[in-house]
Image (cartoon, rainbow, N blue to C red; front, top):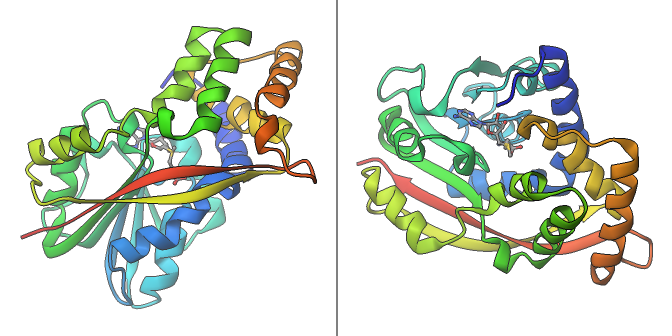
Length: 267
Ligand SMILES: C[S@@+](CC[C@H](N)C(=O)[O-])C[C@H]1O[C@@H](n2cnc3c(N)ncnc32)[C@H](O)[C@@H]1O
């Protein structure tokens, strides 16, 4: 993460929650809770919780007799999470060194964080370490860019209009799409029995401009990328031309997105 002040981190996290969570991330919370077999009364950890969309959904399922902890490295994300759901426990920390005892949780969930971890294998080992025997792990990652055409087009636009660094920032969420490599990663982390289920969802932004602003305001600052208004206007114009096939009659952008949900059970 580049050096951003806490205020900048909070502003970016607020944009993430407002612009990206409803368009992209919210729709995966129920499939993830199903995949992790979340039930009333359980104790659950959400790793790389961001602004807490999955932790909130899981908290609804475990009910008052259960408990949910959300962990993230970014204090701005956690500040927005705590504001939205003060009843959940929010912890700052890294996935590679979870600050919990062995065998603490009935389930560990993590959506769309694994691709960003500096040491993915260590993070997966940690998730299993803190699971109780018989506890369930569910981890979601995006499929590859070659199977999500709308984002492949956006990456091309970014490369042309802004440059390599911004294009790479948008490539990074899609680097774990190869299911063989994903299985090998889990096996290397001591989870040879991981099962991968690929599901298609739909991303929906109110307009192409909103889609662009989601990344520009809710994600790029975390990758150290800031664009001025002229650059944003150029980007929106080029994106509107490139994404025309995904724009509805009402001006919204809608396109299919594929996600792998990886599940395993601790022996
Ligand atoms: C795309 S967001 C996903 C957030 C959330 N799970 C959601 O569905 O909205 C990725 C998150 O991973 C977090 N992250 C990245 N590296 C991390 C690490 N090593 N340990 C913990 N969190 C990390 C980021 O701070 C960010 O909140």
